[in-house]
Image 1 (cartoon, rainbow, N blue to C red):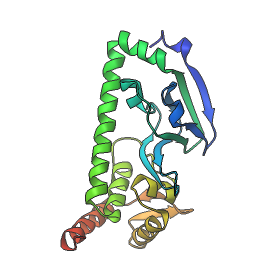
Image 2: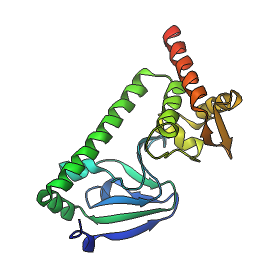
Image 3: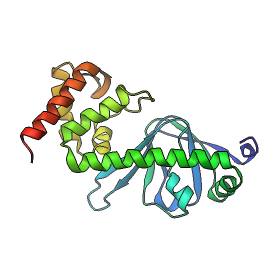
Length: 212
C-alpha cells in the first residue's frame, strides 16, 4: 500500500455535488476518506432515482468497474462534504494484479456489496414500503457498522427503498407518533430499537394477512 501512496490524489467535494458520472466510471477509482456518498441510478425521463449503495469512509466507489473493466450507468453524489482518494483505473488494475492481498480485499468488498444488492432486490419485489423502511432503519441504527442514515433528508431515505418522499414522510410521522423514531428538521436522528422491531413485525404480519 505504501508504494501506491505517491499516485493517489486527494479530492474535496461539496455537499450535493456530483462526484462521478457514468462516463467517469472507467476512468478513475475512488475511496471515501470522509463523509457519505450515494451511488444511484435514475430515470432520465421523469427524474426518479434509486440509491443502490450508501458509502462511508474506507469504502470504494463502483468496484464492479474495477473488477470487470466495463462501464456502469451509475452516478455518485456527495451527501456531506466529502474527501476522496483517487487514482487512474489503469493503475488500480496493475496494483490488483501484483498485490494478492489487495485483490482479496477487493473481492470481499465486492461480495459484500453484491449480497447487499441481492437483499435489496428481494425487498423491492416482496415487501411493502413500510417494511422496507423499517428494515433500512434497523440495519443502520441497530447494526454493528456505521450509521449512514443519520440526519439524511426524507427524499434520500425514499430513494434508498425505491419509494417517494411523500410516502416515507407519512410512514415516519406514524413512527414518530408511536415513539419509534425521533425527528429533527424532518430527518431521523434516533430510533427506539425495541419499538422499531415491534413495528417491523407488525408490518410483516399485516403483509401476510393482507397480501397485495
